[in-house]
Length: 353
Image (cartoon, rainbow, N blue to C red):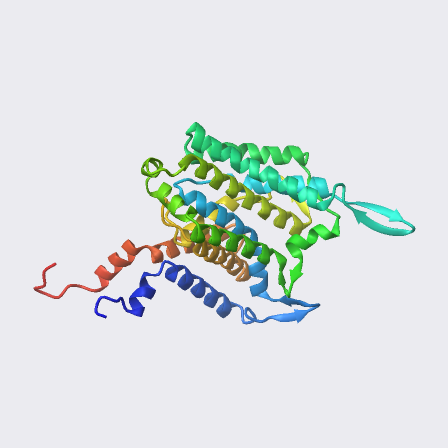
């Protein structure tokens, strides 16, 4: 049919085209600089390799980016997710802890509280952090960046108070499985991120929640007039963002076997916002893509791994990272591509626009 768009046009119009192209380009650059980049080894029942390491390290950022996506889709932003990660990790590490006990001559580490209770408390604390942000934004009416800035500053202090300014070491081995365990040869943290993504995908595609969030992001007042419970949904979105940050905190603290109130989740909020933006979600609200945010997180982590692997000095790696992200954002900008096309392709003499 004449009006049916061709496959090429549909591919060009797909929102995930440029995120995928960006990820492939970065992977190709990484592979060209590291000959063994794609090499995988099976040892002790696990897959090992650079790709597996990137996937494992991306899981916390994927989780935070998923929560951030919904917040940004409602015209908001949450810059306190890094602090929430630190609080969640501190609560879990303090409750799990682990001490050496010798029973019948056998030495073993035991948890202060049952591990499931520590996980629940850490996640409830993170949920409360997100709920606090949501109430400040939706009920009190504070601007999202100001509301979450409060928790960003105070939350880091709370985490340091909980840990008494020290790094809390965890000695309970079962806790390590969350961040460094393997299931079917792949990192267990990756399954957690995938499970959360599937739940969110089902929620926004099989129910009206996705349309409500888009409506709030496009025009909150119109959505409210149309009967959408804008304030309640906004509060729930911020609370969910806090919850995903809490899960990320569990993974990070489990992976490093400790909780550092000062450094855990540091600058994670910036990486999450970048990942969401690279994935194609509009910062002005409305259109959002969960899959794009997952790809954006992979782009950020792959780029970070590339920078470290090629030996960029630590004092300038952030500059290099910012420069690459800047170029990537330009590539994804339709206006920039249109301008470049205008510079390269000159109109024929005598033609009129």
